Amino acid sequence: MRRPEQRIMGGKKSGSPPCELVNVAYTKESETPVKSATMSDQNYRNLDESDSADHGSKQDISDGSIEPIIEGEPFTSYFDEKIAIPEDEVHSWFSFRKLWAFTGPGFLMSIAYLDPGNIESDLQSGSVADFKLLWVLLAATVIGLLLQRLAARLGVVTGLHLAEVCNRQYPKFPRIVLWLMVELAIIGSDMQEVIGSAIAINLLSVGLIPLWGGVLITIADTFVFLFLDKYGLRKLEAFFGLLITIMAVTFGYEYVRVRPDQGKLLKGMFFPYCDGCGTPQLEQAVGIVGAVIMPHNMYLHSALVKSREVNRSNKKEVREANKYFFIESTIALFISFLINVFVVAVFAEAFYGKTNAEVHEQCFNQTSGGQSNLFPNNTDPLKVDIYKGGVVLGCYFGPAALYIWAVGILAAGQSSTMTGTYSGQFVMEGFLNLKWSRFARVILTRSIAITPTLLVAIFQDVEHLTGMNDFLNVLQSLQLPFALIPVLTFTSLRPVMNEFANGLGWKIAGGILILIVCCINMYFVVVYVSSLGHVGFYVGAAFLSIAYLCFVAYLTWQCLVALGMKFLECGQTLSLQIVATDGYNLGLTTYPELFLLNNMEKEDLPTPR
Image (cartoon, rainbow, N blue to C red):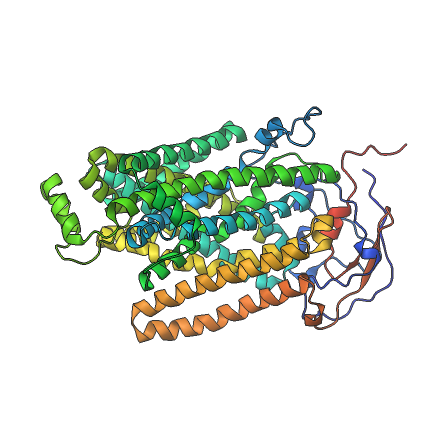
């Protein structure tokens, strides 16, 4: 393969600058669109892997040669195969055949909007606030769609997922901290999925399988499901589609059985109001946003889109891929939104305004007192979780409602477990270049997630097990900036995205959306810590908050520079002019990996004779 000739035009290497990310100084020439080329995942992963170890050990480019390393073992992941995109000359603007070929990544991504944590947030929203917070759920889903669009575009345009881009562009210490924070979010999500699956198994077995037994079963079934990807990517995606269908059918059955008031439902969905709401309803609204927008989902979606064959040297194909992935994501999140609405509406219609005494009496009469002890015989408002939610459905609408509810929760838990495993694989490989097998990854993550869950299941009751969800929601809320800020940073950089970089409108809108989401989640964290009521927790939270806010400020500072606020730049940057054979110039900082990726000659080009 003949490589393009490249040379350095001036510029001396200075000391390590404090601004190490992407302080790009634009010139008129640099605004010229850079021709991108296509490379395989193998070449991307092997493109100077020493870059990912430390910025101090970056390749010395002062000698005038920049040669990417393309030799080495092929990089493999869960998605070893690529789905070919069919040609459709008849329907140039929109083709259902092409949409079908691109269908898959968006539905896998949407499963994070249907995990047990989301289901619990939905049922609590309905029982606490009636239909009044449906508009919050709608707004959170739309915001999530817009943010997922950024993640998908990053993967399509650069050929790298978010973790890989972070690995190449952030200095070593921020990169390690970022990886640890994302891993915490994945483990927290995994714990919620284990809890949901264990509760579902307990309900389906009529209590014969204890909660700790259900926790242990989730270890085995995850390994069984992971064998599915050996049968091909499309079959794996079809299986996820089946699980989503099971959730739609089960929760849809509950919706039809309860028959909610459609007028109140539509009013709650499209009129942003909350008449008579107080602190509990406000906290529930904040919880909805925190449950819907998941940090690790940004990393997952940016990786999943790489499973389609897209020639990145062809701008038309890249633009087409972005379009179809966005359409597919919209359809997938619309379906997940409907399923969430089913759950909210069921509990709003049937259990809003109910007291513990009313439910206690109903369950006592229906189950001969078997489940009535879950609800104290007092006049306090009913409080439910995914376990009590199933029980109370059984008390009011019969055993079928209970078992169908449990099947839906089990499908939610199992599907989310598998996508969480994929997220962990991509994050670990992207940040650390550790190429673990899927089973080693599952053993690590699942062991960390199961240990505290199993201990609580053995030594405590179901109240404490489901109560862990509140803590886990807080944990994931804290990690949101570590996904949202990097994805906005890199999709706004022209050297990374070329002409597909965010325009001014997207930069402003994206910044505002991320600010709103992060502020809402910080409020959620403050409310949770305040409810703990212990001075030791306050002191510990204060110290952790200082370190946390400093790191968020660092990421925000780099993001603002990427958004165009050049007055925030500091220190000296290495000013290089790299000239490729196509004649385009681009000003870069010390780390030009992504420039190289976008200017590499196509592998498939025959060598001129």
